[in-house]
Length: 184
Image (cartoon, rainbow, N blue to C red; front, side, top):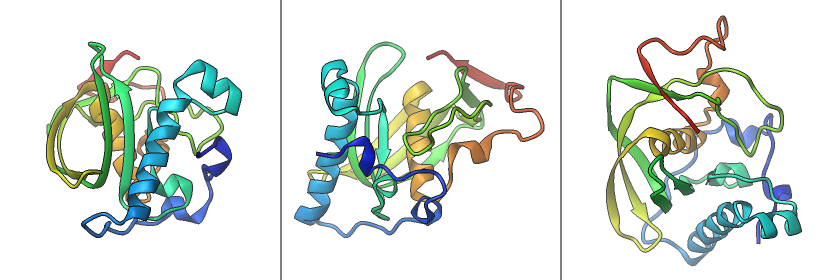
C-alpha cells in the first residue's frame, strides 16, 4: 500500500522530467503500480483509512509523484453533479480542448506540494483525452468542469509541469480573463 511517505515532494528532479510512454500491453508491474495509485487516492478520501494511515487526501495521482517516470495517472473524483469519475489510465493525451478557460475558485493543491500556493490556475474548460485503461481498453473521454481540471493537472505531471507554473506571477489572485469559475 502506498502512503504519503511514498509521494515525492516539490523540488525532486523526477517531477520536472517528461515521463516515458508505457509499453502496451501493460506489464504486471505497471498494472500493480496503477492499482496502488488508485488505492491511495481512494483510501485518502476515506476519513477512517486516511486517519489510520495518515494519508493526505487527494483526487488524482500521477506516477512521477511516486518517483516512477511513466505516463500513468489515477483519478477518483466526483464532478459538480456528484457523478463519480474513477480512472486508472496509461498514456493519456489531450487531443482537443476548448478555447474557453476555467479555473477553481479555491486554487489548486498537489500531493507533492506541502505549502498552500495562492493563485488561480487557468485551465481549458473542456478537453478530450485519449488513453488506455488498466484493462487495455482504448478510451476517448470528453471532460469538463472539475474533472477536466483534474485531468489537466495530472497530465501536466507527466510533462514535468507543476500547477503553480500556470499561475499569473504578477497578479496571482486576479481571476483569469474570460474564464468560468468552478466552485469546489
